[in-house]
Length: 113
Length: 115
Image (cartoon, rainbow over all chains, first blue to last red):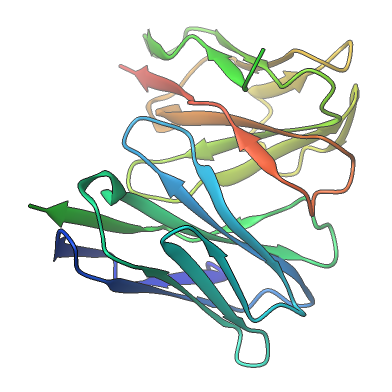
């Protein structure tokens, strides 16, 4: 069973609108959580990295939140742009064997003009 | 180089053929990872190197898969007697140090199609 579940699987939003992606994980003990953006046919690119002590982290129009108690994270995209169309992947690292990252299946975001 | 470079970007193989996929990590990066990404799925861990040492190969699907990094820089993932289920994108990633709480940089992947 995948230890990282993302929702929704896909979504379509209009340019300029906001959206929020969800990530639930069961990895324990927990070390850190990352959000990656993956354009079609490209490798994932890091957006944010958060340790268990961090509640929120921003990178431009991207803001990630983390609740380590409930094992939930969200990625909020503000004022979406066409270039935000991509797959967004939540990645969790456990404190044991922290190199063995657990990847979610991703949320595919399509931004339309 | 400026980023992680993988080659070939695309490979079509007939079932039973051997293939070799190459990864050039960012210069000086200690950690190197290989992942397998099926269509519409997140990457799955295959193996992890710290310099030339292969510390974990537990994700390799079968003994047909073999990875090496003999000089602690370039790595090769070899798949022998390819099967259709091996069709996937193979991603390589590198990290500056041996502790993977740091930034992980991915290559663009090698898409393998086995006919």
